[in-house]
Length: 206
Image (cartoon, rainbow, N blue to C red; front, side):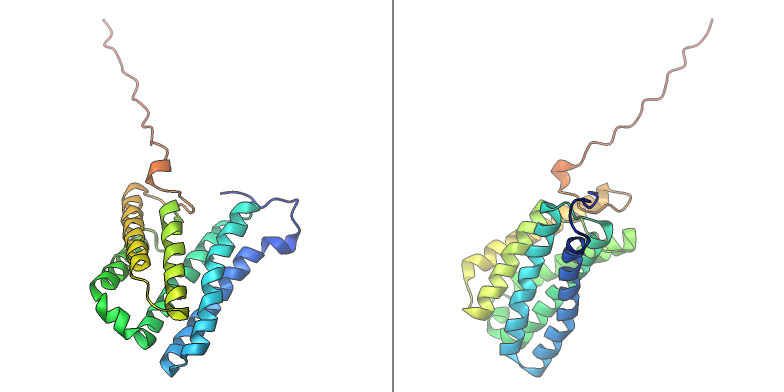
């Protein structure tokens, strides 16, 4: 885990966590707006919240501000925001949701499975933040933002859903490989091979 760079002012060290907290706060507001049928307010809260998802990670990596707390807040914010996004789809995009119910269902089911397995294994969210999961997160954010602002884009949905399914599958693989919790694992490809020390041979003495 990268230590915060002492050269940066203390206030900047809290920016990524503040953005993650903003998503956590926005999530119940979005759910309430979805329940109340306030699509306009929902959309203009959702879009900035989606932008913070990319911004906090980029700031943390660019300025060496990663931390274990930040990784966990980021994962919690992501999870709550995706739940709020699902609430918005149910409330305002039922036609799109119904037309692609198997695709949306598969994405949600595999994502929930990964979270349940992570909780059973580590008693916390995985917070791996793999390269593939970041790509999937960006694509899903772009799709949902475009959906609420301009309308459905079928090709982008399939691209985002495919990336999400692959990212969840890789995280399930990582859950099987890593006996202890680790944050910010780039992916299976970047894992260092575990070297098992050879037992010293004892030759029989004459």
